[in-house]
Image (cartoon, rainbow, N blue to C red; front, top):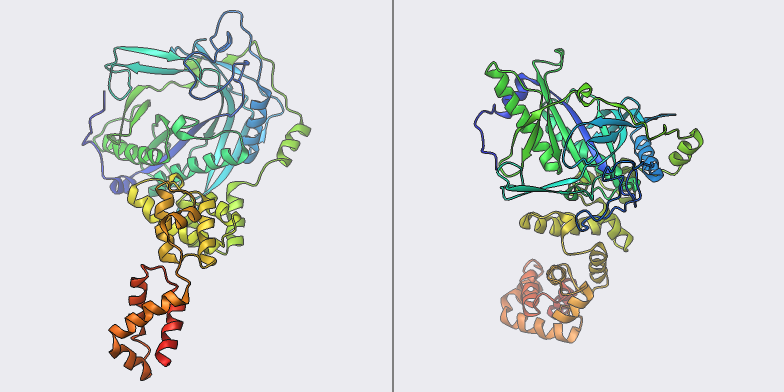
Length: 503
């Protein structure tokens, strides 16, 4: 059932003026290993339901797990990138609860001995401010299966006629990253939450540990929010909104929960410690279940798995092989490209760093690449309400477009027509130029014919120019450009016009 909007909200600005929000964010990243966490079942997105299973991932009696070594390496990579300590020894535990998509009736996770702990990352907000988020832990676990509720609305169990369970996802390796309480964000709490999750996503991709595609559920965030009267007061009761899977939704979830909880507290009520569900369509959260504490899960060490004891030598080998982190890479690229701080922030916020980097690698100047991606293409993306990276044009095509301009084959005005053809699927820029006949007219004979016609039509302008006033010459150039359908080189036209008038 789709949740109905509620009027029980305090205006956001009023809420953050009177209450201090504190966040806690748990991010789950699905690791891009070939096989599952504890068995040899292959991992492939979109497979036929229940075809990627083994006795281990189905929880059949007598089936014994084996730890995926690549998943351990990926977890260490993540821990190191988040400036965490890597445990010399850690172990798995059984987290006991019943869900139909967890066939064993327990999840194999880590509890009191995570593989990585006590870390931090710095995130950059839209105006360039740096905000540090401290990491409590990053631990390994396995994913659950997927429930599909049939016959209801919005894919939820409420009102569904029946439910189906697909165990293909059950057992896929996960790393869960848990923050310490995020304090001091104030009215920027929603932006901090969004930037934090986005920074993690970028790190996962840079590390090569996950495709990190949020629309596929590779990265999911559980967003905890609580309010207190002021920063000196004890932490308030938190809610946990589960499985938020887009940056925009993370931001909206925080904003909504702050306004909702402020309304509860203003009315003299008590915030319930519970899980909640985010509804993208209505922009609100609704109750799930009363939130369990750790003791409710009856954790105990997994008896079928030995402790994981990565050697110091292996950890340092992994550390030495880490790639350049996204923030350092952006700083390096900004220096190489010569962009001002504000220009680089615009590029980052538009998701255009990789696009511009690839365009520059294709032979375009940084200024030329930025001109197209942050100018004409950004305008069209906004107009069509799509992400810049989803536009039907590649960095190689933009590089080719700029090269055609540099070679004098087309001018800027014609380039926009060429871009229309590329976006319409007519081929690469050079092919569009040929098929649409968009080359700049470079034949002086053809230009002189158009110039003579324009001069004959405007003799008064000719006299003014001959009298030393070159201002009106623009009208002649404009007439020639119109006659050549914009396919003339305006600079060459001006030269020829002045030569003709001087004769």
